[in-house]
Length: 155
Image (tube, rainbow, N blue to C red):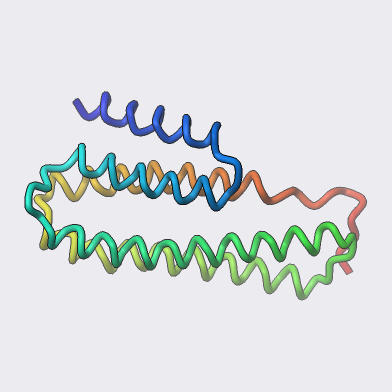
């Protein structure tokens, strides 16, 4: 049952990845699909407490993802300019680590609240779905970030 569910999640999400026209559109679609997959995978009949916690969680995670998107846009602009300052790169790398830390901290902080609204089994299934969709989002973010070309000098 779980394997079939995971396969459905990935097929559904990958279909979205192939049809999305922009990163924002992709992100919105994946988050919507995530909600649908959670509804199908977990026994959430009349569990408004879960959805209240979930909506707060997704709002926080969306802000972290938005921060990452904005950092990538800034990084891409620096790459396109052809001149990158060392301190600027150090600062962007440090900011990326802070964003990742905040995202991880949000997951840890919300686990307690999800535990109040879900069975242990459903909480683990929730975090599996969350991790899989998050991995897809991260892979699309990574695609938007080019490697620094060998001929680009970091001053």
